[in-house]
Length: 265
Image 1: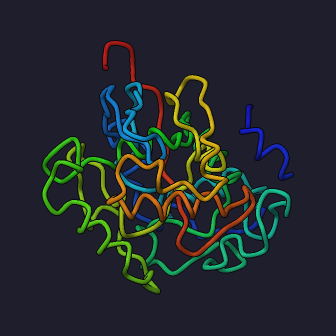
Image 2: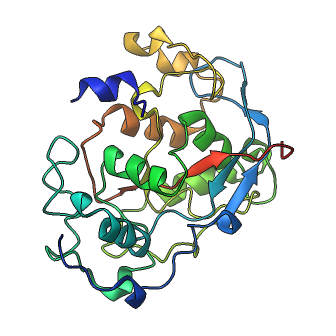
């Protein structure tokens, strides 16, 4: 399994039966949305749009119920057994030590999971974490238009959503904002891991070689942005750049993607 180079450098508990929890809605191909090949405007690219190949993305973020089934099948990723190199001490801190959690959060996005845990979960589903380019392409859709930047009020709506504090209890997945592609909860609920989160400066195509914009290291990032009104994107890039692969936070979860089948572009 290949990890981003920066990740490489960073170095059975009893659970309540999975049947007690609602069946996850984000786990099957039927619950994935097709994002057709297209392009988006990377934050630090001047006005150069980047091409992204077609892919499938989970319509919903991975929930506590989803993740509990993964842990049941892979006890090495349980709260008390996980190795500290793969997750810090706050891993799954909203769960009990026996792997249970309040039933009312079963359908809410799982948080307090590390990049390593998220990537392993996706692998076990035959999927992977989205690249930053793929995530931004999917998240850039408005409610009624593929390119949200052309939709009146889109940026102000997103900024309003993410400016609210994270609630003590997250809403059930699939109950907030649904975008043009049929993908839920991309904004205003949690932050989400991307495969190359610590290479967020990349501006190349999601499956090709990418380059780094060194202006970011010189305080000139905003001057290089092709869309300085996209404040929410600045916050996302700042969040990603602050993370290590073993970090967890109460507002950070994930969803999975996979390559689009042949003929679906």
